[in-house]
Image (tube, rainbow, N blue to C red; front, side):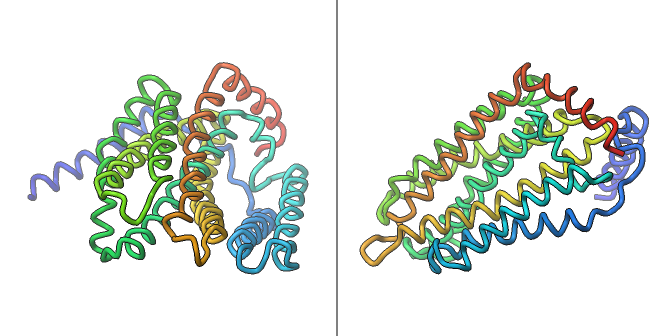
Length: 308
């Protein structure tokens, strides 16, 4: 055990040394100042939008509160774009989104993680409330998702390094969409083997999506802004999770009634998740071609005199 620990430490030290010696620096020339106005506008946009989506089915989409939430979200977003375009050191320069790969990576991160969050949300309710499984049994049923992610995620990274992000994104989107589509006929008595098969298909799709999203985001930005690109991709994942639960939960709640079971009401949620998966496929093709990559130098030119 002591030798193993020593080997691990030596490996980490070697990795740090080799990175310092051979990986080029990509940070901006100097750190930016804090942008509190931009942060507040982002917070208002996301909070009001998410709250409006979650509370819409119960309070009514035309209620003053929900209309006010969506209005606040729209005004905050407009204000954010306007302010950030004129700010010397913006939280996020809107012109970055003229890079097709960067914009596509952001949308793919939102779509993929919205599907994942909705998947976990609906399945937890279905397995425990409809199938009457214990929390442990429900967790064991979700093992196909975890196992496929552990096994195939490293393959995705190697495939990105070998062939670029497009093949991984196409495979990820196709299997995410297919895995969710296989559950659109879910019933309380659906054989468990069919459910586990759908879980494995969905998990394989999700295992392929992380590496190419990060690669596409970073490669779609100037080298000095690679940190911003990675941060936006990470934030988009969190945003996707929040919106996934909000949108899919609201859609299922709207379909649920005294005469409609949860299993039947969940079908609309599975269709939304399937659409998110196939959106990753389409965006993966559209944002990784030569025309899309040609927009990256344009962004570098547009922001050269503005980005610190």
